[in-house]
Image 1 (tube, rainbow, N blue to C red):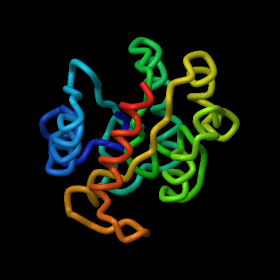
Image 2: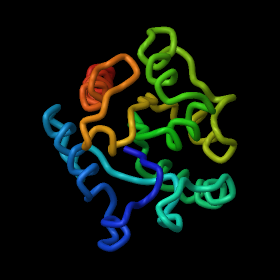
Image 3: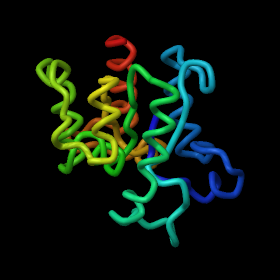
Image 4: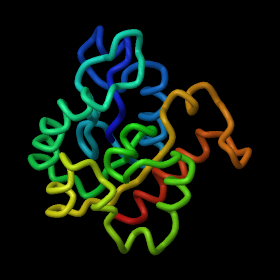
Length: 169
């Protein structure tokens, strides 16, 4: 799974996805039989928490992607669970997160690689390894039980994306 950036809890402990939102995501993964450190790993688009927990700038994203690409080449994951808008835009191109989630669930999406839309720093990785890209909502709306544009809870949408990823692998 790839998120945007470390949060306060992650920054303090030096481990990703450990705050309330991260624990919610791990619980969803476990419900689908996936165990952290065994079946999946965690990474972020940027390695450092931006000041005041703001969204990373394009420059910050660009500065960190080569290290993320190196990590992905070493790990060679079959799928990337892209958590939140920043991660989705880096791998799938710009656009509204909800639209990207809906697009990824159409069958024709699975047969193409959105290579031309991806950030230049990850294109080589995507073209060589062609992992399944699974966009999902950021973990915060999942943890705080917020609604998606279609009225369902974001946690339900997130669980559906994790299920689809598991079925496709």
